[in-house]
Amino acid sequence: MKSVPTGIKGLDIVLNGGFNHPSTVLVAGTAGAGKTTLVMQSLFNAAKEGETCIFISAISEPVAMMESFVSNYSFFDYSLLEKKKIRLFNVEEELIKAGAPAVIQFIEEKIQMYKPSRLVIDPVTVLAESRENEYEQRLFLFELLTRMKSWNLLILLTGEFTMESLKESPLGYLVDCVLHISEVMLEDRSERYLNVIKMRGRSYISGRHTYKLSSDGIEVFPRLLPETEFKAAPTLRVSTGVEGLDKMLNGGLLKDDIILLSGSPGTGKTIFGLSFIYEGASKGEPGLIISLEEWPDKLKRNTKVFGWDFEQLEKKNLINFLYIPPALFHANEYAVLIKDILKKHNIKRVFFDGIEDLETALPDVVKRRDYIHSLVDYFASQGITTLLTSEIPELFGTVRLTQETLSGCVDTVVLLRQVEVEGQMRKALSILKSRGSDHDKEIREFVITDKGIEVRVAIKGYENVLAGMARRPPSDVFREMFGGKKS
Image 1 (cartoon, rainbow, N blue to C red):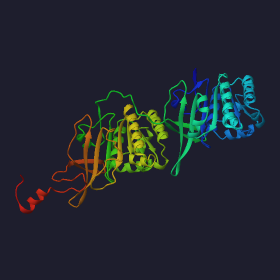
Image 2 (tube, helix red, strand yellow):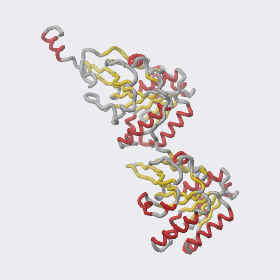
Image 3 (cartoon, rainbow, N blue to C red):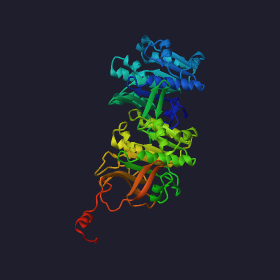
Image 4 (spheres, rainbow, N blue to C red):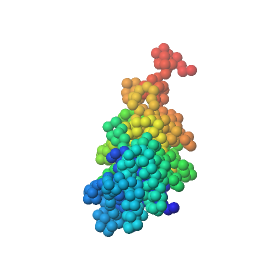
């Protein structure tokens, strides 16, 4: 048994190579999910590679109507119809009423005459529904599917099913492969999902994948999986782009590490990230900026304040931008896009600004956490050093670094705070952890200058600094008021 391409971008990855040939494949799904589009796209792309294909419509549509429908897609090529690489037929109502033997004879005549390698029946459920009762419907399908085994073809069948109704259909156990596609409403937007229900004789990536239906047809985006293979951990260090932070980190970040900067609004999180990317690009290390908050032109404008020419670096392909509005973010689709950018531009540094904004696209906390874990693990596996930022909504008091438990997937955590000190607002940073390396334990003040970030002296003589309201210890205040020496 050989493997043949599905003709659907991304689906071969999910199926670990494509469809088995020969085999019977059921493309099941709800109305409007794209079942006919998927099988038509498979036929046209197979025909472009030299295969002979047959499409049989079971809903008595004129051939001209079928051609008109599929001509709206970019994969459509009328010359394939002219060359008879694809032939379109429909099964008339009288033939369907005549029963399984008549339908089988009709199809086998076409097979004998044109010798296709790939055949579609769309939808196969209509053929069975012409029977009077459920027993006869099951018998019809059993006869038809049993005969298909002798045709030695790749047969693609479509049928309208929900996941629940599919479990009750005999098609589920008669075919070799079942793909279920559906469109689900998530509040004010929709998401399209593809599940592989079964696949005889081949392993596949299980779970819920997403897909997009556009003028190019269907593109599948395999779900993001955790990495299981990593290179040896390097000992080389890379600069963060902030000299004072490099000193606090004992020489900079370990290459391939992931650093998380969490801070309240106005603490300079984005500037730290842009400095990190600029430092690498200036040394010939291509960087990628992923932002869910600010579009590229705005970021490029803002960096000019510090004398950083991001436009020139972008022209040299040393800096790449990916702006994704949270409302339009589709997790699997953008994971595929990000991976493509990393490979195309040989990216060495990634700055992901505002991971908390993923809450709009991935409201489920566990799914969002797993997605971020898998994404940054992939970055590390590719030898990429990553800086993430997350906004803390609380200006003062007890804080959470992120809405997710991300400390397990990052190597270094830096907390940035606005601190009230004797009636003035100052900025402070503290390294909470740094795996595999010693680090400065002090809380230090930093300022944003026309050159970027400047880390200054440790904030001493105060407590409660990281809560945002620095105060002198009561014992010191007492001594100032009433005299006395420090113990």
